[in-house]
Length: 339
Image (cartoon, rainbow, N blue to C red; front, side, top):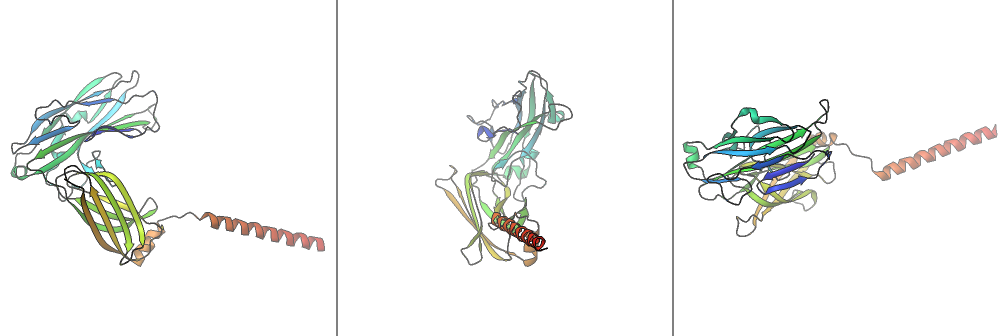
């Protein structure tokens, strides 16, 4: 799968192509940034507004450059969230908004025509897709200060034949940002910490929240878990150059070093450093929380994890098996010879 992200940092090739068709060229996605009030020299939609808010029509042009292949496109508008790998995510609408979020881009940015949420582009076809960006006219918006962030998410897919599953996928995200009032600085806190099992691996899950309406960029996260009142590290993880969306939280998964967890009391320590230029110098958060794993929890977690047998144990068992076969064969041959 190939994914291209057209968002806060412009057009970036995120993943190299996998299972790609050499005869397929990705569609062209071009946002019309020549909109009244648009902040200049930005590769995404960016507006500074006052209490009067904003009511704009946005246009994105899609082009299918392929000569002999239709391309299917799904189009959505979503609020920005933060993925568990510490990246801004525009690809989905959360089931529940963060409890710190007062205003969501998901309620302000809509397709002008609902039928455009799924379109098919014929070979060499060009199509304009229109969106309405409208802020609410209420007391909550007038009192709001900060950033509201979301995006236009475009998923392109093709099938080589009607009976085949999707063979090529490209995704695009065009950032849409509305800034209002005096600049608000992001802030972080550590919520729940617990042990869990994901993909047959025991992990410590730390829920980290940016509870302010402000983007936090250039983020380095360094987490470690120790036995309480001990320096012995049982789990650790580091992530570089992440991004955290406004009013969002994410579950940071820290893998358990030994695979199997043991019951006891533990301490999670997380250091988050941002080199975002909105700060005069690197901004650092120290997040710390104690948590416990009961005997029952440890047993339940460990039963979910499958461990491969160490190679040296396999070698030892094979040698023992060969030795047993040799001894049995020797005894049988001697017995026959004596007869």
